Image (cartoon, rainbow, N blue to C red; front, side, top):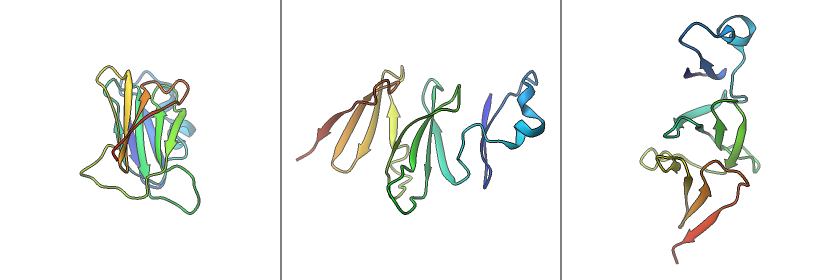
Length: 127
């Protein structure tokens, strides 16, 4: 499968083998990861388990840095990240075996279990 971002539509998961029925008709017009029409940049975890997306922040407190499960399209977890620095992207990084995920935040690094089971975190703060 391949992930394709179509601006103003969203992120689609396409099966390149031709065996999947969801590559045509109505399913081809519905994003696999919804809502993702405003995504500006995305990245995939080392094992391909997760998709990380970032979109411009909107008014309010909704997360704009989001983690999605690639196999199901499920939204797993979100964070607030006001601006994008391509030098620091991706903001969430996993170990190669995906046992841990790391989020770089202002003056701290947050460590999560790689599969986000309870969405608990450990923080390392520079003082």
